[in-house]
Length: 131
Image 1 (cartoon, helix red, strand yellow):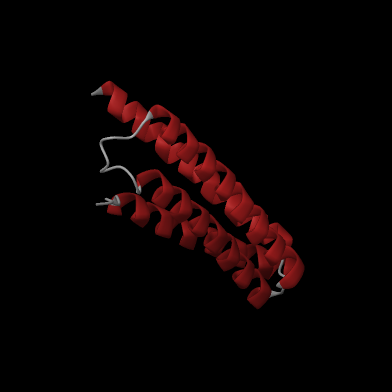
Image 2: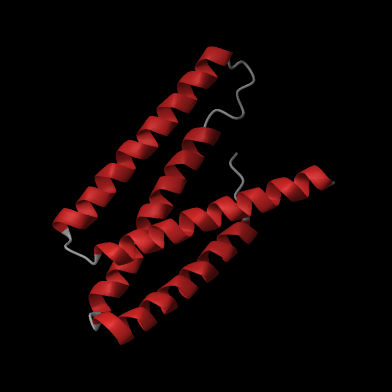
């Protein structure tokens, strides 16, 4: 059974809305393409969410199996890592070439969410080690 931390999902959603607000303010002052910029922010968040979901699923799908060999674990890790980046390249290529959205907003939103994820995991790791 996979367990999802609801507190982290709430943090991601709140920060997504803050990022969307920032991008709306940016488009108000500099770009004036509100609909394209909002769609770009949604696309960046969707790419981030799909990548995180794929990696989370692949990391936890065999967690209940106690008879895992070290070779199989390494194989699963490499498979998840390569699949994550293949899907990332595919989704970003799809976003940049086919959807014709604002590339700066997609990269800004995706980078913001990745940096936020690193900060959350670093902070969580510090809290777990201090206990």
